[in-house]
Length: 443
Image 1 (tube, one colour):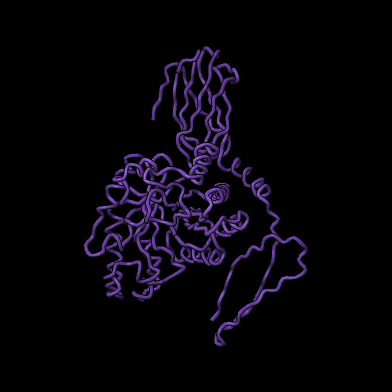
Image 2 (tube, rainbow, N blue to C red):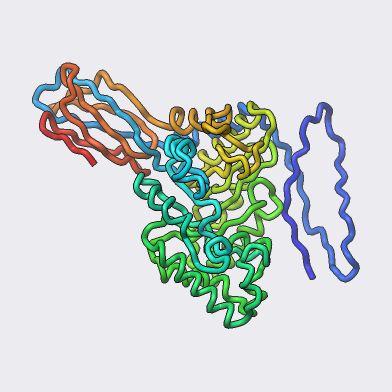
């Protein structure tokens, strides 16, 4: 038996020159062969200004694009333009507790005021859907409300195979082909029910930490077949691997890359990998980026979908969230970040990770930091006073974050035209033409 480990350790605050470091390896049982193939040490000289001096320019480069607003009018004088970003292209979202939405108005309003993507915490999991009889009584109204407000939804999760505790209590009584049939009925029940309505599905949760379905069915291919069955049932949904211990720790980062490569090699239609980011304290930005770099070698998009930072001190917690958010947002492989933080629910999540609290669900310092980054620092809202006069009118140049925009063109102070457009990633500037005074486009 061979055992492989790839982990990282940060040793901080050396005041003097380090002459030597000794690493002690505890010997495994005699029947296990143990070989140290390679070991390396790297010095991280990374005060906050250093890593941010690299992260912030990356954000400017990969999350923004140039725009040319062409105001077509025979009279190019006294024109001003107001540019307002109404939505981010990058996914900024949160977990949703369906037993609170929509019944708790404070909770519901807080979510819609602060997030643009959603993932249900428990109400799409097999154990909760089918304790005895099949039910979606909690999930259905929450999903309907989110849809009505234009919120994209992640499905979490079709299966959870880390052990007996995360499957319906009646399921372990089955094995072999009978259990396989129960699995395919589960795909029909949940994926079929919401086909065309959800953007993503986590297929089999946390497979680095358990192998229930392979062991109980005796079918080594079943994990790959789960992906194939879900894709057949809902061809438009994106399918994810999902696991923990891959960015908050380096213990399983390389193993996760190998798993992604394994699934692709065996025909599983994996569209992206999901990294749970449960940080037990303020994360180290350099180590976090290095782990994201390693995950990116799998060649798949990355979503950080369960981000939490646990700190007793609200200021330290806020700084931790900002560090993690900035590193992830600045990484070219990352496409979305969803928090798993508690807000407004006393019995859900760790209060040390909360971004809001109290019956009225009020932001704390960590929540205010989230809003500052997502809705101010990483949004583009401009008032343009002086354009370049052209033969056809005036042209205004700007650089904005990818997302949806509304433009108001004022002539002598009065709104003469409006237009909406989506600024998507791409090479070169996007050209947006607005005809005055009759071009009024909404949608």
